[in-house]
Image (cartoon, rainbow, N blue to C red):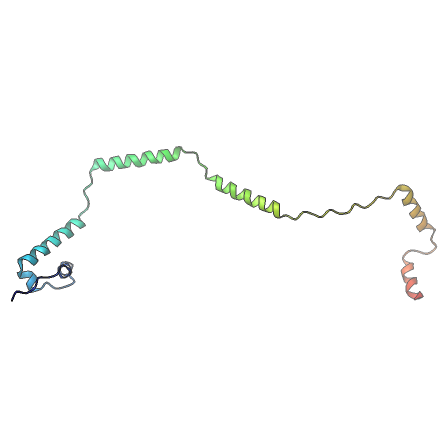
Amino acid sequence: MKPEHCTDDELIEILYGVREPTTHAAICAECRAKLADLERLRAAAAAPPEISAEFLHTQRQRVFERAERYASRPNFRWAPSLAASAAVFLGLLISTPVPKSQPVASVPSDAQLFSEINALLETPEPLAAAPIRNLFEE
């Protein structure tokens, strides 16, 4: 009776040290080959990528070109602040209560003013005494 081969999950656990290698994995040529393939894939994935100096130079040049294009555009950073300030100003202007119009007092003519002054001067009692007199008469 031939023992079953290790599953891929078991081989991955062996590769990362989660599980102890089984005797089957050490004996079976097919399982050892799969484990070796997984080790090569792991090493290739962990290796730094090979990037040529020419590629990096071209990429750096493109970055500089974009930065120059961005710097040459007009700078409108103040526009949102200006719009917000204008909105606040208009809001305050609209919400400020309008004072009610006061009725204009009619200005008496000079003749009427002098006649009222003469009437006050000709009364025998002072005006302050009139309210007190009214209290005693009741």
